[in-house]
Length: 459
Ligand SMILES: Cc1ncc(COP(=O)(O)O)c(C=O)c1O
Image (cartoon, rainbow, N blue to C red; front, side, top):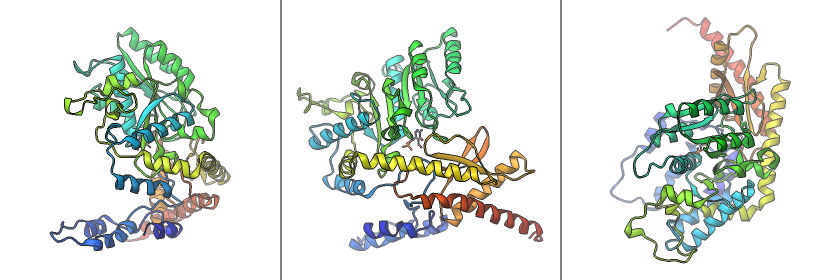
């Protein structure tokens, strides 16, 4: 089934012909008393049919394409069913996770960092800020004291969410202005940190983005680190979208190793099936200070540095999936050069799309293309900004309905943009060419239906 499905991918619409009614009807079924046996698998065909496929033409959000060797790793991980709490529960799995975490650290220029795999960038960011908080404003025993976290106005929503969950209060998250390339402005960071220092506020952490979610901008890491350090703050880099592109363009990511902690997301730009994120940190003792709460029943009695190791002392989870197996299989099967080449292709494809947008008079680029996210919009003379927002919203809806490509949306300085983000090892240049064709065609159809609607008598 899996092989047939993967082979048929190019013939699937980028979004399935489905509806809420259909998925309710198909899947909202009672759990039967009698088992169906192998017949239970029959309905998996419906699951495939009503799923958004990992299509070569999927360019939405920031979401990897799920390469199949890793999928076999996920299956085998479930078969061997290791609980990767500690070496004593999962000897090989712990060794493999530490190995792949080391490979990822080295790949982004942060050799010597340790860390763990987790559910994704959001989980990694939450753990990073928990570590920062415990390091700068210890809260585990007495509850959370007040303190401030700094990030740019382009930061991913998982940062405000983490600040809220940690009890710091989103009012204590300062969103620093960005420049024309959507990068945090260091002088603005300096200014707000200085203001807060005068007001007697404690700086807990500065979060820099290495690939902002909307445009892929990379904050100026060395300058931000210098300012953050001078004010005593923890330096976290959210590299969930971009940092793994360091494999193909090291020069853009100088400074990642300056961080105290760094989030990566192999289920984005390392093409792994969900879920696998990664948190790296410079100092394991900071992780243990935040996460070590061992109950007596779980205490590790082994003094050996390998056999006595427990991930639950350094991360938020106790029971943990064997996520490392898919990564380990996939990275070894394909080799480093294949990943480097696939990332380089995505970067090239994004530039190709940007070029096509520039060559098309009806379209305009809304942001520089730093990595693989291309933000643009359809424009028409004489329309107000609000009308252009509405028109592009309608175009996006139509593009998705037509199903030849899947793109998503973004808000840039308050304006609605179409957004294609290419982190897809299946994509070819011909797939990228379809994006502009589809937007133009959808714009025509949108205008046509708006005109006919205008001339129809109201119901
Ligand atoms: C910059 C950035 N940080 C964090 C995340 C959250 O990652 P996840 O969806 O794996 O939780 C994303 C997701 O797109 C992201 O782009």
